Amino acid sequence: MIAIYPGSFDPITLGHLDIIQRGCRLFDKVIVTVLRNPNKSPLFTVLERVEQIQLCTQHLPNVEVDSFTGLTVEYAKLKKAQVLLRGLRVLSDFEKELQMAHTNHTLWDEIETVFLATSNEYSFLSSSVVKEIAKFGGSVDHLVPQQVALDIYRCYAKNHPGTTHPSKTNPQTRLNPLILDQET
Image (cartoon, rainbow, N blue to C red; front, side, top):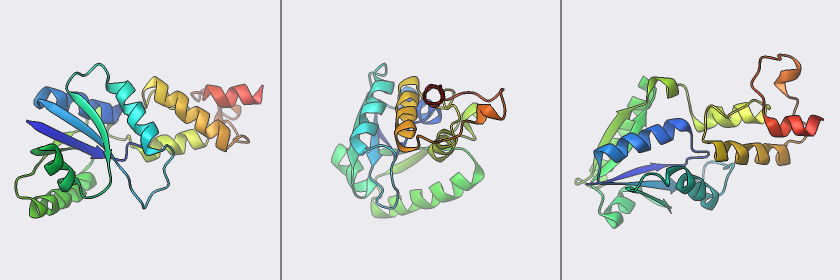
């Protein structure tokens, strides 16, 4: 059985990877699909996100990474997928995702949505949270894969060279190494 795991993944987080790995145990193939959202200003291009996900999932033999613009159900038909895989962090996610599952099923009655509850350690985590932390100089090492963290640091060091690092006011704060390099 083929499952599609769609999202913007801007950036991919350890929470996303947790869902992908668990999905790989349930399905013959998981296609992680980077969707282009015209309503968002992305940190990374679609191609960069695809490459980041490929790097992070190369140890999973039943993962394919792709991108798509349009309706997810149309992409699922194209890939002959039977399932949309979705992660749930909190109750508000469920309300939104259930509505989307009903909409997708209305558009194509052969598609089912499978929800996986996010592991406890990632229940607070979102790409938006990661970007907010990095924007203000915090470390995201414990929130995203290592290479993605480096990409994020490079991006914010380039785009926000004058960022004040929180370690100046709180020495216990985890540190963004690229911002520290700029301050020395």
